[in-house]
Image 1: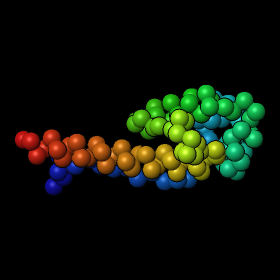
Image 2 (image 1 turned 45 degrees about the vertical axis):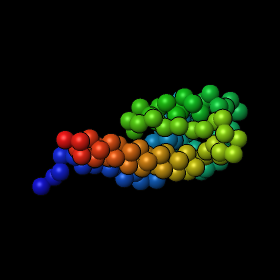
Image 3 (image 1 turned 30 degrees about the horizontal axis):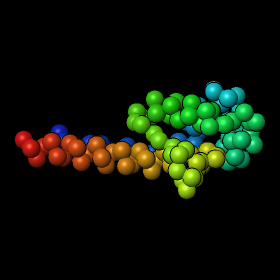
Image 4 (image 1 turned 180 degrees about the vertical axis):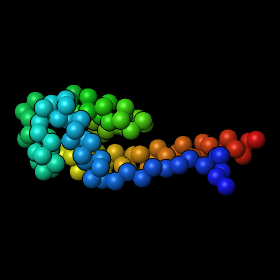
Length: 113
């Protein structure tokens, strides 16, 4: 029997996430999906790929995956993802954290009942 307080954490496959990232960037910036998937840095694929473009891609990915995906542009020590694999790895890491936090909130609410 399924516990109604259990969050189902969808595991994200890196290849699927890379493909989705490539599709979103292709739609927005018109870089070929094949080139994006080569992991060449975004800025080398399109001269106008800047922090605003990354923010727009980030918002598209938030809509796609249903959680707030943050890229820390203010922390100079933080590495901003520069290609599809790095961006996919960061998205998967943050998605996992998001699901764990969501489950913790559900568990806390269940304990109060």
